[in-house]
Length: 292
Length: 332
Image (cartoon, rainbow over all chains, first blue to last red):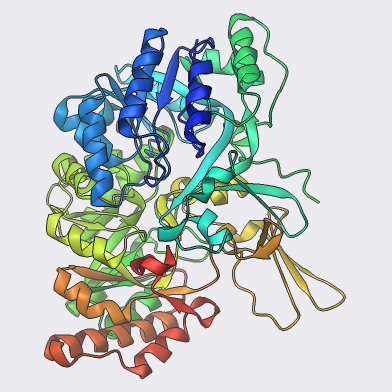
């Protein structure tokens, strides 16, 4: 089983980002996803910085995948996407249909990212015709759905692509044209001052009775809980999961990687280090039983 | 521009047709559509009657099959496509690739519209759906500004339909998991958002009310304060020490004043949201937009939004508030 570092969903200062990936080059991860998936205005790293970083990480033996934006609206974003596909040199994580189309036209292999909306084997097979080689299911696609999908794919004589599951991190739940960070700070999106940079793990949102609930991350909304599928490793193995995705968090990432590295080589499932991912078990994503 | 109106049931369909809808959109009584609410939607016989009623009056009927089937349930969605073709629907509104692919192969003559739930926001995304599955039209997610809609009309490979009025999803449609994060039931998989079975209202001794979704507090209201339906995105939360509508306040989209720009941009159809609303809503909102569109067609240069139209629409808006939503840059 391989380990991947998912794309950095937050906006960190340039030096912090570079230091993070310099460190990651020494971690036992096999795949690193690079690039901005949430907001095209976040430009602490320019395209050439990401490319340079990609080269360095590849030299350290990592497979590098360049990730695309989940929500593409502006012409400038489409232009950047075109350059990403051209410059990819290897793999692209396609996080919306615009990226799928560009990869398809240029014959570039891609990873189907979690915001692509693939729920059944037929959709997956269609995308494989277009160049999908690895698939990261969305947050809602739990164990039962994946088991049925895989069985239907194999029964139809098809083969599964590489399967990568989000094993650690805050789940991306929604995207909007609106920037919720700008709204919370009472500034216009067009004059946001890039204030996301002050919130390296997103901006916490709590219910009116003080229960931590969601994280605001620019135009993205995440769940509050850092989910952890470590204890479900036996089920993941049985499903043929090839890659465990770990989403970068501001603190403790080296320890999380070490934890999953140990876990993947052990026959025993590891102890839980994050929250139970309810989606995996077919229920609500968050823990609701302990609500007051 | 065509006026496409919601039909949650047969009376609403008839009300929409009578009030001047060019087309109505409806769903079956199961999870194949994104308004799978109890007591709503059409059985086979009602759909047959509805189609006959609409066709006799020159209106079209589109069947919304716009949720995402998992492998085990794909056959049910395919059967729904067969039903749409068999009953004589004028188009199916589909979000999901496998369903689109099936419809294109099994019923190539039945037009396929890409649902708003398909999350296609750019020309390449629309070209993908057009080249792969031959979509004849696409409904745009409510994320683009009016300038972006205008540009997309120029580059899109198919005619575009945009939302004109109704409840406002503020997240990219098809990409919102807030409901399932809290309840396990989602728009994509189950055709529901914040389903009523998970909603619990609490009356407090001092007259205040709280509303919870699967035990998670969505909002609290003062005694006289109006309270809307508790979707996660329209609750009040604490962020950075302040409590407010952190994602969106309850308000409805109303693009009436943009009508000339949408027409000049070449938008093919205006969509009214609200299959979950009653026949009275459908009749009133459809009549207002019909009149506005007819006046525009008769004399585009003289067209102005009339205060009477705006107040008629505001009466049906969430919290009686309307917004231009994402069409207006300031909303972002």
